[in-house]
Image 1 (cartoon, rainbow, N blue to C red):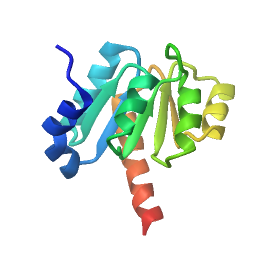
Image 2 (tube, rainbow, N blue to C red):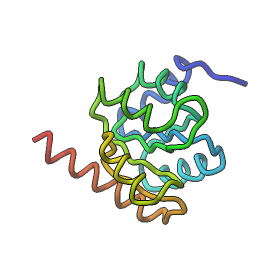
Image 3 (cartoon, rainbow, N blue to C red):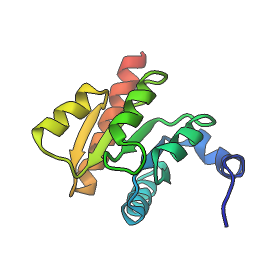
Length: 142
């Protein structure tokens, strides 16, 4: 059963207002669900979509505190998505991708990523980097 964006928002509005909200954009459904579960266990509200088009649709209606973004996705790469996002938003983005050599990390950061983690990764490291991004934002906004 497919759920519409509006129904999704209505059913999750309370949790979106009470917690830090993270959007996971990754075409690997198993990894996306594992990250969502891990983040929820650690007090975050996590949503996941499998491609940039679905993320762009969600972002028309919802604001997220942080985005976790894969690089290699069908139709639109993480870099292309990030470049479009940066034209209208400064939402923190952590690239989480298998493309881990120095050139890819530098390109990701140059294109607006706030952090870059290579797969495979340690979930606790991801959690610490998410918390660092959140603390960094609080300082910037004051």
